[in-house]
Image (cartoon, rainbow, N blue to C red; front, side, top):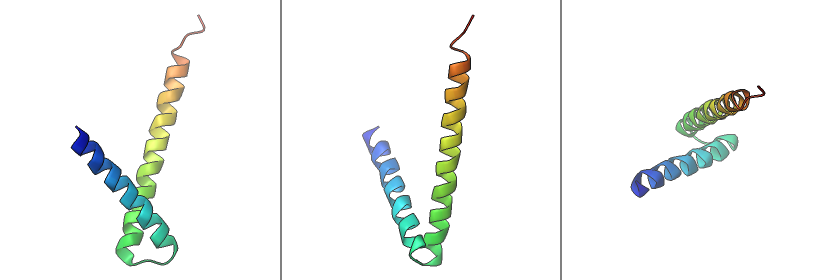
Length: 62
């Protein structure tokens, strides 16, 4: 389990590095990785918001 979490952490950190590098005009592959990272972050943020909304709606004002 710890190995999987460390792998995910390494991917996140690598994605963030590529975002910064792409902003500074890095190579094409870094821009592709940066775009994938930003899309994944947006999807994660959207799913978290929708999950939070559904939890608030089901908390019940009966």
